[in-house]
Length: 87
Length: 463
Image (cartoon, rainbow over all chains, first blue to last red; front, side, top):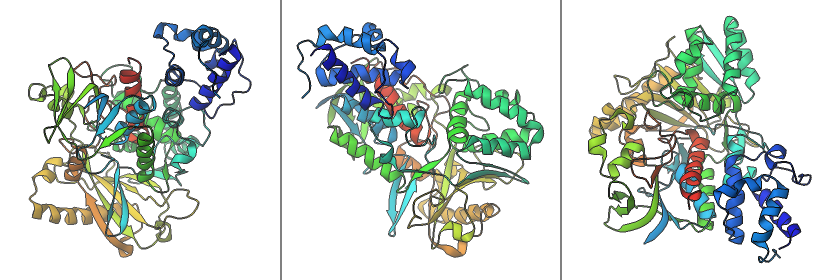
């Protein structure tokens, strides 16, 4: 998957976790929590959904990389380069 | 047989925990002693009519699409949509004491104006109290052992107003006589006065049905008539359970909604620990009369969703000396919510404090007679607050602490669990955790959030 695919995956996951949010204007370098209602339980779900759907294991000390869209895409790019994009 | 997680009890908390684990593909099995799901919040059919047990109303009402708050969080975590629970808001409720009334609904402004009308000298203090409570993170323990009354006294000087505010909150959640844990109070104040009541048209059965359907779709296993004899353990870790029929099921961890005392008992440890007050089961419990009517309550002039009343100026919330305390109670009608069209069935339910020992001690004959006798006395005492509906009655039933014990397995047949909550859900065994009333969150929404929270914390983060 390339960074753009990963961004789409993250948007799909966020859409599942916070269905009542408008995700169309999310900014890359601003923490998710400043843009949408995302509590710690929801945040854990980003990690859990990545594991469930793509078998990506993210250790707890790396969770901070997922605070922004830009950070998450950068962090996941090497981890997901061999994962094929969803159809 | 082996699972990652075994869940004890198919009530709201156990089912919610199960959905979280099954959604994230954990092998999980819910074991339920009874022949039906629901535990404390369930439903039954009697002489061709549907009845709910437990649920009067869903607290924490929020309008569909609300992005924050307990109800929204619950739906998100279980991947439900707002439509799945079909919540209709209340029409309006009140607290009724001799000569005084406070009405409230799902708009906090009504309660504020009612306090201003009935207690003009107290409204500033009440407003400051409400602001103070808004600043506290829900569920956060400020100070262990802190109770509501000393905090309320800092803001409100009229003891009658204190009692009228505590009345609905204690009735809907306090396992402690005449007071409630402050953490519990902050949660209840928010869920009842700030957010308010609603109900699915079909009652609690709709919510349970949705939970079970989701859980099974995700591959979760549910076994009914699977009572647990023992939680197998070596004193520090559990390895699984032995069922009543001798079958052994192994698991990496156990999440129990059976209650703290009851769970320790299953671990074989309750004989030494039962005397310790921090695991003592609760004493506060209730009876409830349910009267089916041949017309809508509104046709008799009764439009309130819920009436919390005390017929004495001082509200007494304790284990009564007699089988029931008829001086106070809760009158609830499932009909009085803002549904699209009126319910087909009609009923009025009246809940009153009860002495568990009296009800447990009765012989079968005495029990039947006592049910009839107290049903009549409770109804008569409640007629100060509701039009006389007895001529419209077509059927009646009553549940007692005995019924509650039978369906929940809680030793005292008590509704709100142990007075001391285990907010972190841990027990003396490193892989046995609590969810449900003894963990600390109450009500329908609280129960489900408890299951979700404990599954996240103890079974998803670590795995």
